[in-house]
Length: 433
Ligand code: LLP
Image 1 (cartoon, rainbow, N blue to C red):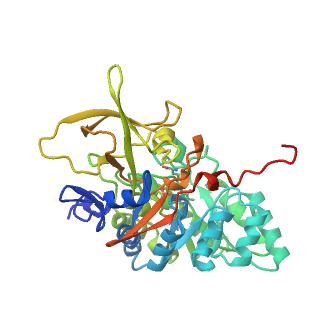
Image 2 (image 1 turned 180 degrees about the vertical axis):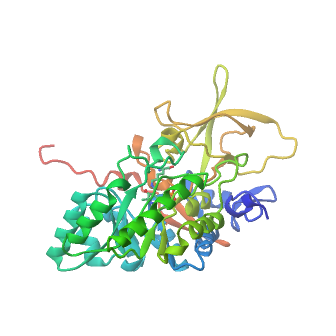
Image 3 (image 1 turned 60 degrees about the vertical axis):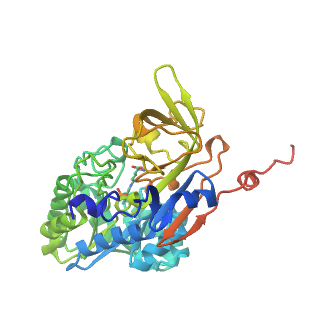
C-alpha cells in the first residue's frame, strides 16, 4: 500500500471505484442512484467516513485523546450519527451546529464550541445542554461567557485559542494562524488573558486551543505552532494555571488530484504531535473536517448540452456554483470523472465545464481532459464531501440538491431535494400585498 492509497479515494482502498466500466459508490452503481434521485446530488461513503475517522483515532493512540469532527465540513444528521457511532466528538461553530450535534445523539461532553463570535444565546444553549469546552477567542467573549455562566449558576470550561503567528502556507481565505487574521488572541498576550480568565467568575480553564488553517499540505507549520503551544503550557503552568487539555484544531489537507504530492498522513501527524507535545501529559483534541469528509463524497451531475464555443467546447452540466462553490470561491480544483469508464483508446476531448447559473464564475474547470461526452452522460466531482453540500445555496432558485449515504450495497436519501413549493414556502407575504 502506498501513502496515497490510505487517504486518497482513487486507489486500492477506494470506495468510489470503477467496476466493469461503471463508477460505484461502495457496492452501489452511481448511475443507479442517479436514476433513483435525479441529478445533481451528493453521495457519501460510510466506509470512507469511518475509515478516515479511525486513521486519526489510531494516530493518537497512546495519548488520551478525542477526535472532534469539524462538522462545518459536512453536517448532515446521518453523517454525524455515523461518525458519532465510531466514537467521534464534534467541533461546532454555531448554535445550529450544536443543535445538529445534539440531535444526532452526541453527548454534550463530546462537543467543543469554536468560533470568534459566539453569541450569549449560543453560550446559554451549550451551557444548558452540556459542553466539553468553549474555545474562547477574545476578552469580550470571555467576559460574556462568564456573565452567562453566572446567570445560569454553572461553570464554563474553557480553553483560549491562541494565534501563534505562523504561516500555514495555504489559500489566503482559509489561513487563520497569522497575526493579521481575526482568529484567536495573539500568543504574546496569552499570559495576560489567562490571568484575566482565572479572575473571572464561573470560568474554568482547562487548556489551550490553536488552529492555524485548512488544507495544509505540510506538517512544518503545524509543528511550528505546536512548539509554541508547548512553551506556552510550561509558562502558564508556572503562572499557576491548570493546563490539562490541548485542542490542536484541524486543517490536515487532502490530495485533490492524483498528480499532486500526497499530503502528510494522519499517522505522521500523530507522531509529530507526540514528539512536540507528548511529554506534557495533556489530553489531546483535534478537529479534522476535510480529511474525514472530503474524499468520502462525490457530487454527481448530468451533461445538459455540449456547446461549441469559438475556440473551445463547453460542457454545460446541471450542477452549478450554488451546489459546489469551491471552484468559484477558492479557484479550487476537483477531479471530474465520467461515470461510465472511458474505454481504452477512447476519443479524448477538452472541455470547459460550466453550470447553468448566470455568472461567468459558474465555471468548474477549464480545458479539462475527458473522453467525449454527450447530453445525458453523468460526471462525478471527486473530493466533494467536505465544504460541498454545507456551502450550497438556492441561488438562481435552484433547490438544494439531495444528499445520499451509501453503506455497502445499501443507499438512502439523507436529505431530499425540496420541491419548488417547499423552496418558496419560507417566504411570507406582508399583509399589504
Ligand atoms: N477547527 C476550526 C476552528 C476551523 O476553523 C476549521 C475550519 C476546522 C477545525 C476544520 O478544518 P479542516 O480539517 O476541514 O481543514 N470552506 C473552505 C474551508 C474552510 C475551513 C474553515 N475552518 C474550503 O472549502 O476549502
